[in-house]
Amino acid sequence: MANIKSAIKRARQNPKRNALKSSQRAATRTAVKAVLSAIDENDKDTAKTALAKAEKTLDTMASKKVIKKNKASRTKSRLSKKVKALT
Image 1 (cartoon, rainbow, N blue to C red):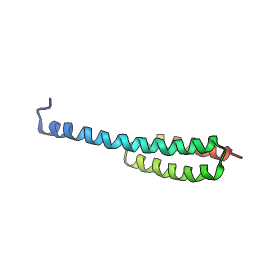
Image 2 (image 1 turned 90 degrees about the vertical axis):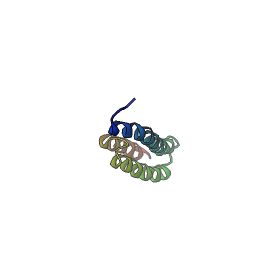
Image 3 (image 1 turned 45 degrees about the vertical axis):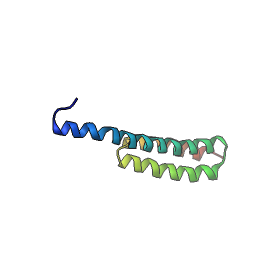
Image 4 (image 1 turned 135 degrees about the horizontal axis):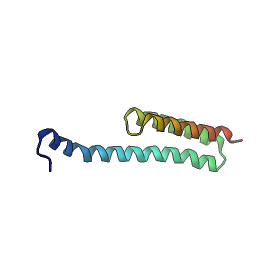
């Protein structure tokens, strides 16, 4: 158990922050899955709108440091490449 005041505070903060970040990561995964499912159904219009929402979610989570900036960029790139490949 932590004995220093700052360590005690950190021990209190960590579970709260972890719970928040977990739900935010889950929301990001859900947004990405929405794009992938639209791609699987070959629905370009739905995929484009889902991609816009997913990009916004990824950017928000990267700015909040829930996920790393490069991961957000890489994911957006891969998704947009798949959406553009739809006919």
